Length: 113
Length: 121
Image (cartoon, rainbow over all chains, first blue to last red; front, top):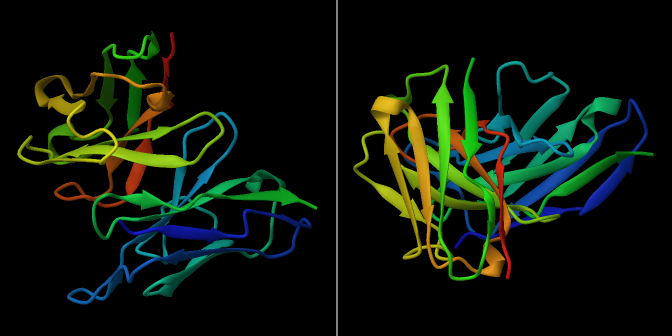
């Protein structure tokens, strides 16, 4: 199974500042035939289901604010919130869909400092 | 707009069975694969199962293989999860989720609100 390791477990960032969440996969999730990284990011607020933010490691889902961006390739990935807003307080998960079983990172809680 | 509404959760004793349903609307159900994903109380996300749009291929997590069965009725735009031989560690909120692309396993672009399954004596 591909193990997804997120860091940090939690972080507190001031409003308007940058928040960075890291995700590392135990093997490459870059598919060489199409040069795509099979990685997605989700946001989950308390009492709500997860919401898709980013797929193919860097493609923003329709309607997601452009302060959210994804980067990385191979085994190392990053979700960046360029200017943290109050409504961004949530747990963020990375997810690999390169191979079954599909697996998630353990989550990173983002709070306001 | 896409809507996924789960039902069928509840309290069941260890060893018991439960059948979850997910009613879908707002998209062409019979052209997308569908997933079940669960979340134990206060824990992270765990993928459970996937079924192709045409019922021809299913995949399971090792933790549920042989005990859970995913199925669908395209005529009713409904996804199911039959859960047998339930264990306390199966206690979780179960979400149905739409696959983003459809024919294989990709990301989840829409999620239901979830239904809580509690396995306890």
